[in-house]
Amino acid sequence: MSRSVLKAILLVLMRVLYRPVVEGVEHIPGEGAVILAGNHVTFIDSLFLSLVVDRQVYFIGKDEYVTGKGVKGWLMAWFFTTCGMIPVDRDGGHGGVAALMTGRRVLEEGRIFGIYPEGTRSPDGRLYRGRTGIARLALMTGAPVIPFAMIGTDKVQPGGTGMPRIAPVTVRFGTPLDFSRYDGMDRDRYVLRAVTDEVMSQVMHLGGQEYVDIYATKAKAA
Image (cartoon, rainbow, N blue to C red; front, top):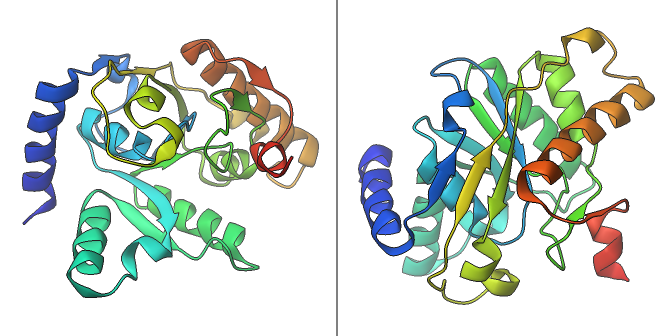
């Protein structure tokens, strides 16, 4: 089954079941490289993001999603790759670099790359400090960053596991952020932090989440 056919079927099902409210999607250009950067509260976020954007959205996912065996493993691999997931071994020593280079390649091909700057799902629904990979991508490629907020998906799939429930969902996109003023400064850690914090500030305002100035991985470990 082709990607477009699968997306059409899922879109009909999601619209009937969830009737997601989509705001600001007109900010996403019809062509060219774009970075979509938003909050991450549950596993199903990427599915909703892919369904509400007309263009194909590519994003990074754990390679374990596509390496399963048997019929179930084949179905999972087919589903995730058809939905735009690019598998990367993020647990290895070079996982971060591999993810960054994959995103760069997608953007240099003039496509849309979706990223969650927190680096992992929020453990408690709050918005955590962003990692600077989003800034590196924006400055290396010159692609505009469009912030977005997922609202309500944590009620659809609490804890990120189990069968999805029926609950209201809103996907809200902000206006594009242009960081061309920092051209050539993608190795300056102060610039990278400033760009990342600006993106996270916009995500916070779009979604209304409480912001916590620590990394989500540290909060999970605690």
